[in-house]
Length: 89
Image 1 (cartoon, rainbow, N blue to C red):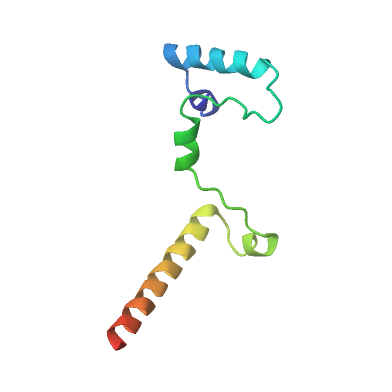
Image 2 (cartoon, helix red, strand yellow; image 1 turned 180 degrees about the vertical axis):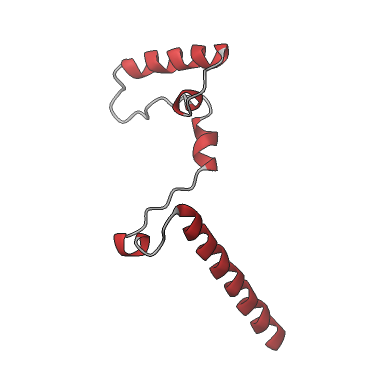
């Protein structure tokens, strides 16, 4: 499924797994049962950290790279502050 979303072609095993997942999703789940997941969905979800910004915060940044740059600068500043406090103690 991920390859198809990225515009790539699915390999044979991926197509087979995709068909299996589609068939499983077509069956109505039991009440309270978790929905079936595609193979690798857990690994994909762990690799992605998506954070929703409030509108006023998002307006301050032109693109996602600028958000990442600002957060990294904040992390460096916080680390320097922690190191200074440890040296004084």
